[in-house]
Image (tube, rainbow, N blue to C red; front, side, top):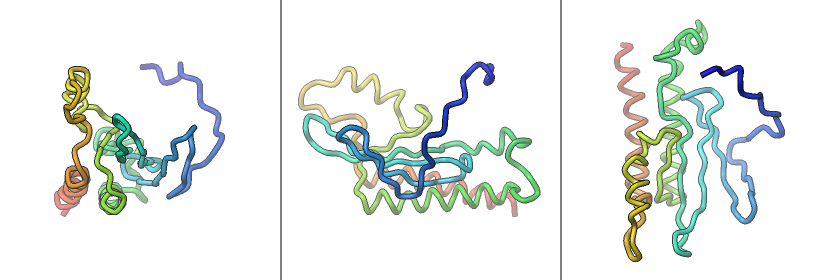
Length: 160
């Protein structure tokens, strides 16, 4: 795609780690989780399903971008090790955050990573009384982030 065809957004705020952002009657909590990019943000989002409260954890950066776009990411100050370590620290930290917060839904910036390609059709066919396909429980949310953490550790291991 032609990135130049999209207008550059106007900056109206700079997110801070742990910042709460209220949109209508919903308050999101933003966490700085660099790794995918330096500006990656992951978010806790309170949601409801038929009036029952849940907490969604949106993992802001799934891929190891520096492996595909090396000219943009890799510098003498930011070699592969920097990116893997940064990603690993963010995944581990966000896993601890969602564990304590009790998040029971995981969302990702890529639908092939959070299961949305299967969950969205299941949601469309959902009948009254069926469980919500996105509500997976806190242990599953933690496992998702453990996988992200372990993949970064494996990448570090390959560098040695």
